[in-house]
Length: 184
Image (cartoon, rainbow, N blue to C red; front, side, top):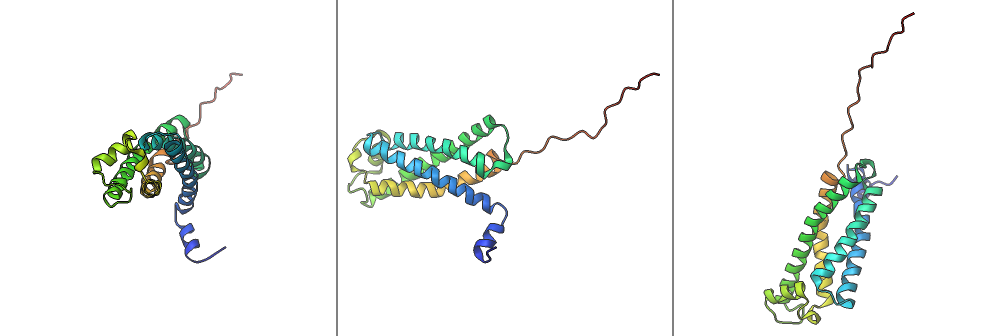
């Protein structure tokens, strides 16, 4: 067994689970990131619509692998867990779009998008695909990475403490059922 900081980290409660969550998250990020770019730059969808579709595809991937691998010991009712997972990820989606928009608005004001537009104009570009050609792919993808890194904290905390929380076991009855006596 290895020693040092890696071993110390892995010995902490929840560390292996967090590592698995990050690996599942990385696969979901590839789906999210790839579809966002494909749908926006090749499909012509607005950033907001492309980001929404890609994010929800990534949610399905994340639910499947987190339930099957990361939190497999906490398996409960799949329908309830999926509802909770979608609910917590809706919050993550709102955070993700908000952070992406803010980063792009700041980036626009700093000239990263190669345009000189107001924050309101940039928000309209994101939501409605107005002036789409002016959204620099580097700025969009950088904003997506920043948003994803921040939302990771929310998603893991919600998944661990709420969605895939260990379910309390049903109390077992300790009483013994009466045995019928036979008359002889």
